Length: 222
Image (cartoon, rainbow, N blue to C red; front, side, top):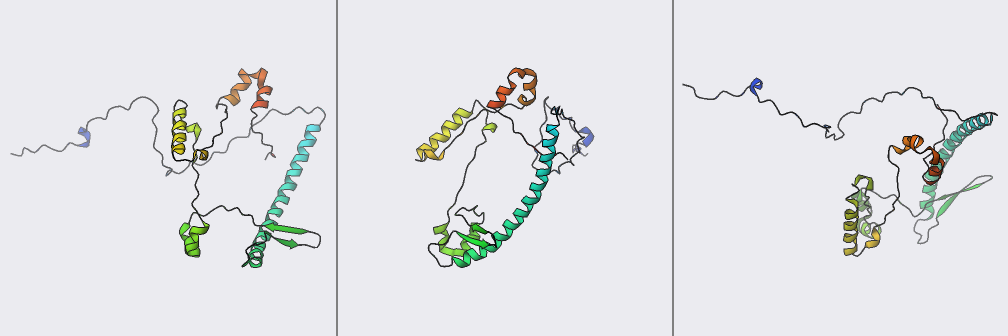
């Protein structure tokens, strides 16, 4: 007689316990494709009063100036890139072997002179092996590892912030470099403030604007 207990089938599997009430959060690792952006419908905004047409004149002038600035800015960027490329070659050729190199090279025009300066500021490299392969033993002489640790205070619960800051300060002090820690504190409005201020704080809106002004962006519509 076969006494083997038959395997539990899917239909016989125990029913899972219901999930606890509340918001169910998914652990998203960035592997999911972003949904296609939906085009928002055109919005209407209250207009600045313009009894004498001066606002319209300023708006038209601003739009015209922006168009001219964009064209000029594009031309400047192209010229700057070309002068930088040509200047770099001249800069290294002229300073080859010099212990006190010139800081700049000049592009001479018929009516102007343009200095191309290469400052003692560098963005750094994320590939130390490539630098070492180029300059060998001099890598340790001319390069060092630079790093910066940044803490997002908004991500720390308010009740835990004092203890965390004190512990970080204590660690740096213990290692003899308390000056490495710098901090800047400021108050920031809540997400609700921007809209709620018009309903709850209308009498002091202008005063608040002088203390904590919102960022204003001026652009051509369309």
